[in-house]
Length: 73
Image 1 (cartoon, rainbow, N blue to C red):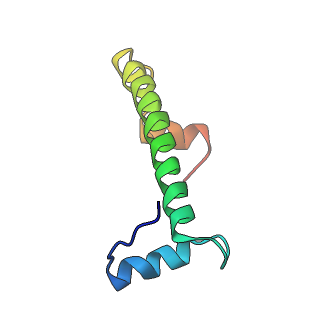
Image 2 (cartoon, rainbow, N blue to C red; image 1 turned 60 degrees about the vertical axis):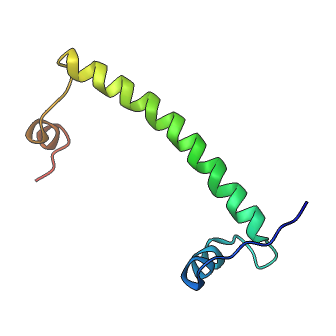
């Protein structure tokens, strides 16, 4: 069931910029954003858990080591 909500003009402008097409509804934009956030959050949590484990095990490199490995000056 559709409903009406109030948002500030600056938020509406941001939503307008996020539309993939002029025909996309605000509902579609918000649904896409919420889906992206939930996927990102779960993926990020997993990546953080792996990174923490690697750090505990001493499997990491310093900035200087990484720069040297990739020949970055």
